Figure 1 (cartoon, rainbow, N blue to C red):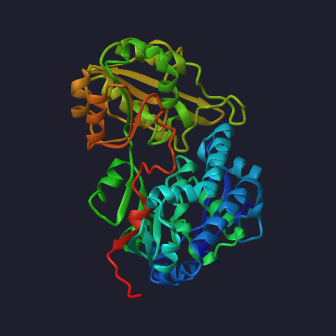
Figure 2 (cartoon, rainbow, N blue to C red; figure 1 turned 180 degrees about the vertical axis):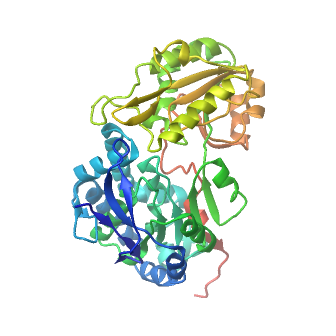
Figure 3 (cartoon, rainbow, N blue to C red; figure 1 turned 90 degrees about the horizontal axis):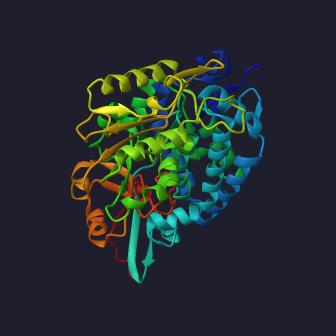
Length: 476
């Protein structure tokens, strides 16, 4: 019997008459059923979020941090409730169910699971980075002191709406700190990935967090729209066309393409082979599915040699059985999406400004199938300039372009970039990099773009998104 994942309405289980299948990518067979929430139910519950906020506000921040740490151990190790029918989910069940519906191999699921488990335990450090060392008791009382200066912060919302993607379970790390900041979450899970946010929520509840802090709505486009329009703050994941509609709305923190890059300076380019491992990891880690994966490598010379070397290093990254310990390449939950991406790349290559270097090395076509799954093999292109349409593209597989450009012109042409790794010791150029408005997160030195320090926010500052500082004087 298939598990039936319910709706959570301020922590209370609710079963809908509208049950929809979550299907295995390879076979098309149902793996679970989810209760589907209509937009009217979502709107009704959003009017009650003050109740959830009031419950969470009464719990001291330190207690919430302790709960979060316990939740991480539970997430990694415990069997948790899954369906309203009494079904449960062990860690091995979670791995198998997520692999079946997402296309992720077991190796990457375990990696992402461990990463998420670690995040729970690091939330205290994360909040120190987000708040710049604020004593969190200030959030309990509403005011206090920081470095001898009176400070006060008030929440600007009674909940955080989160419109989740299906591409990578680790993105749930971005909303987890909200609980320790006393802000309830309203989560719309990705269609192919209801598993991870549900398991995170159940881990929090088992650890002692008030259930009212969690609302969970598998829902339609209309239901997502209700959350986007009515929640005081929203974390929105989506493609460029989706997030562009909301880019100028201060209530919405958009998470789209990162277009992260590696720049090698003139002072280091002669030693580019020393950094090949950094380039390869940055492009291919997590099967290239993250916005912090490198999508463009910019160098002042040796672009042809670098493109070939990266392509050769990735040529053995191929489709394997999902439970193969060596599997590193993810399949696509939607086979039409894989076909569309491959056709889009080929269409851009026909413009004549770029070369698919990987195609000259690998023995097979980019688009592959195995065991009913659909894959795209790693693709490295060599672009003549940033005017080429592929020079600044990002796709959900190991894809990157290599562009040759003199160092003096790089920062004027790279465009908005979530993460930039600049391999250089040129202090004048480092000063320019530090002042570049197009860079959200800067790594100076050979740091892979996919490795982040969680106390250094790289996709907006969640504390500043949820709280506002106000001036205060309190009579003694």
